[in-house]
Image (cartoon, rainbow, N blue to C red; front, side):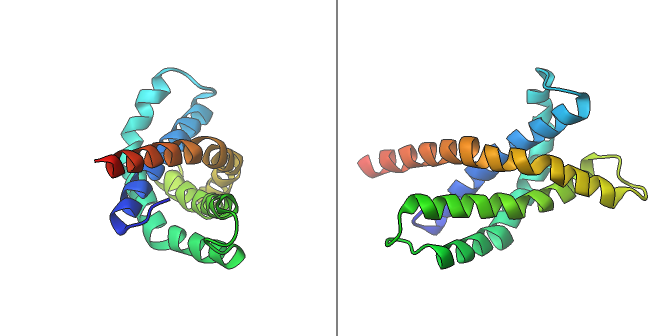
Length: 157
């Protein structure tokens, strides 16, 4: 886990990029009726705007809120670190999913009509299971592993 503000920014950028990219791929696949090779490249076009939104939401709203709630449940240094990490991951997915689904619906779905609310609710409902699984079993472990290896390499220098 990050120890300094600079490390926190790097970690957040890494996590946001991996989470957003995965979720954008998933949503494009839903829109076109299933996963196809072109989706991996197509998702890159949405990554800049959704990545910035995700970074801002996580940095200023969701991240601090998830940390505050999770540290109320588990004490860093006292309780097992895995419980704190899992709580932060679950809380982050729980809060980020409806927020990011809102912006995805606003910017990338044909939602400029009376059905915006219904489309946002449907998008959020479709994204929740994947966001949790992707965070807990994919993006989270991957980013923590790569970030940890980067920290270890920097300490050796």
